[in-house]
Length: 198
Image (tube, rainbow, N blue to C red; front, side):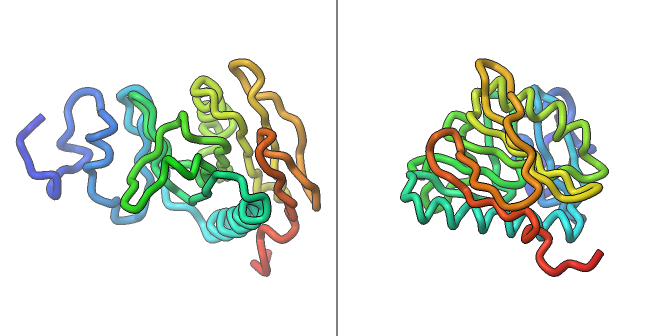
């Protein structure tokens, strides 16, 4: 790789397999795309649309309310860096062990994660339906939720079963959902899009 300062580093300047440190050193993409890493391969997702962002924000709010009510020792965040040895993911929502997050925390290890949520958009269908669930299960993340926006909003709930995820529910209305035996979220799927017009 050519010698350059971190501030000037660009995707085009990189040679060879990527590392977590390489990806974290990249400047923010001008169109707010997300850079993720799987075993040396850089993956880029375009910035999310308004409906995706609204659903993410409202779902995190419902999860945060459940965490506060339960007193469970976890914290939630949107679009945070979650890392493994040669992997860096930016899930739409992550629920992690509170002890893994202090002021200034940039990344949390996959081992500290209880729940990861991905919201499917036209640009990431196969990643969120196939690739990421397989990799999250491999990392032993106890719970995975996939939010489908089309044709109607629904939350597909998965639980870890040995080394793969088992689909346990598809929520389209109001339902209480237990998260890996740690706390329960009162999901209100109809509220996820707020007052966004069709």
